[in-house]
Length: 208
Image (cartoon, rainbow, N blue to C red; front, side, top):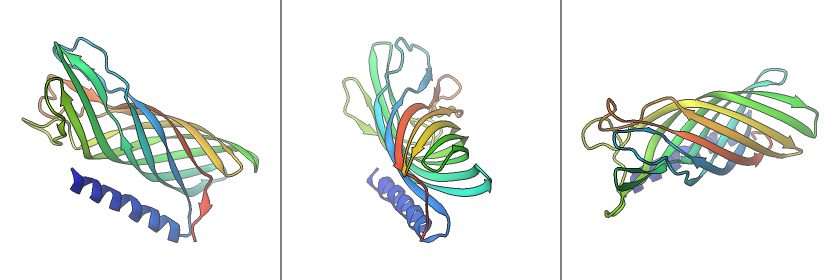
């Protein structure tokens, strides 16, 4: 897992470096999230828990028309859930490098603006742990097939509402996974990511 994390962080900092040197607007962002995977599995007898996670990353702003912009980004995001099947407790905590591709509408004046964002995302699993009661935690095995925990790639939709006051941005976001990420038996079980969170960031500034 350490190799995955080092590779993921290298991608993140490379994206930040490119944004800082490009003549486009960009910003850092980060915050907290509550994830609750949607679960459908034989023997499931308790609803998913809602563990607290973190996310941080870098976003870019590409003007389209007046208050409409195109805002791709790169996020380091932890997700997961806890649940019980039969009498066994489970906790799964995947870590992703997520690439959101949002369209953003900005409404307001110079000092206070309202932000509305929506768009798809694609995420790649780079680490995390899975735990069952009575056993030690182990690294998540990404892939599709026997012995695999969850799939490597997740896709979904993002929706955000935010306020920008002077140079500070606060956004509330909801992420809805569309891909069944169940690894070893997707025909029987179904797992989809679902996240609600709050983010804090700087206002967009032009790259130097």
